[in-house]
Amino acid sequence: MAEAYCVKCKAKREMKNEQRTEINARGGKKRPALKGSCPVCGTKMMRILPKGK
Image (tube, rainbow, N blue to C red; front, side):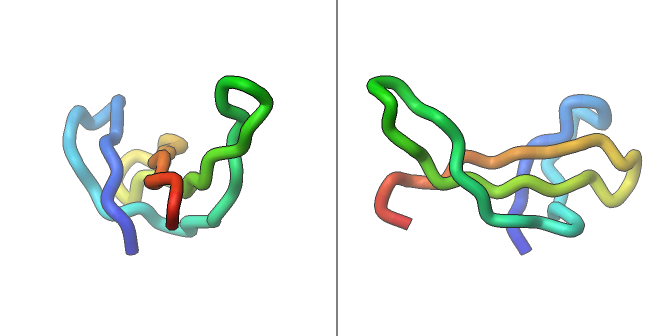
């Protein structure tokens, strides 16, 4: 499981139900990312991954 920052809880938490996805970046390129939810409050969380991973 990956860690991400929960804006609502204002704390770093382990993501629940994480899914690997791609988001649009500058210049029409794609960046890898993880989407999931906070296990405490249920808010959506996202973590942008390094380009090579």
